[in-house]
Amino acid sequence: MQTLPLRHLAADSVPSRGRLHPEPAPAGRTEFQRDRDRIVHATAFRRLLYKTQVFINHEGDLYRTRLTHSLEVAQIARSVARRLGLQEDLTEAICLAHDLGHTPFGHAGQHALNRALRQREPHGEGFEHNLQSLRVVDELERRYADFNGLNLTFETREGILKHCSTARAARLGPVAERFILGGSPSLEAQLANIADEVAYNHHDLDDGLRSGLIDFDAVMSVPLVAQTHQRVLARWPRIASDRVVPEMIRTMINDQVDDLVAASLARVRASGVASLAEVRAHRDPLMGFGLAVGEGVRELKAFLLEQLYRHPRVRAMTDAAEQVMDDLFQAFANEASGPHALRDAADRLASLTDREAMAEHRRRFSQESSPWPATPAY
Ligand code: MG
Image (cartoon, rainbow, N blue to C red; front, side, top):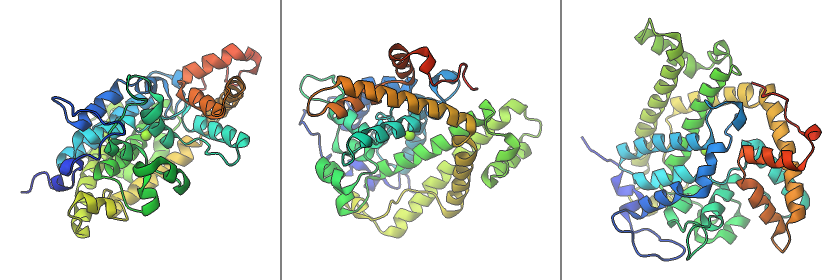
């Protein structure tokens, strides 16, 4: 039996492309371990604890936040990396950093900030959380005497940047060159991207069921979920009712990890790709699900979009969140000055946690203008 089958394609199969500001090699750790450690110590990382995934932070302490989400992404990706022989520290670093650029209030916050920026600068760059994650690690963190940001390796930065227009790519330089020349990032970066999806599909399903926003009978219309439910009941006919959903979630994640390992390996072998350079030159990602599981996951995502993300009660909260973001951006932009005033205001607003943004809004605007429902909606 072959162990560590993709070891020869891992990011450390060739020397790192290095850091923007050259530094001596770390003693006693790999370069990617140092990246991971710097991310864990970053201010933006700690703030993820109070940033929303789907549920606004004050709605309850049992729901996922961006911090627990990032930890779950890292856990899933790391177990796949270990089985395939990919670089685990790099995989973990990318996962832990991938959401550092998120605004308060999840996608509602990003949407509002992007819209506000574009209203003022129709030809400007707007706001995109993925680019902001790179901006946080490249420029915004202020922790080191010699440089702005965390001065991470090329490979971690390449993995954080998941999408990018060609105009922006030209400005960002080598880290974004694949958006101009075509090609793919490292297998570790591809893996982190898929683990992100696996994590949020399942924890949103879990949180959705616990909150009562998703109806258990309704979710049985999703074949992947119904089949998993049947398997759990067949294996544990007398299972306590409160253990059913956790067993289902765990089973689905395990199945998808197994499928991801097998299907990615098959795809790499069929591609003939034999080096990291060839991974990067390959047009399409090599990491991914097989056909059947991929289809099952698409059906689950479609269900979550319809039943959870567009649920009237989630929408009521996201409408309120957009109002808070609009009001605060106006206020911050009016206070900022200089050639980068709007970007500075956007950076300041994006860095806030949910509860900081709410408190700031309460401080600046009358209670009567508060867009929040009087009590949390659920
Ligand atoms: Mg994510």
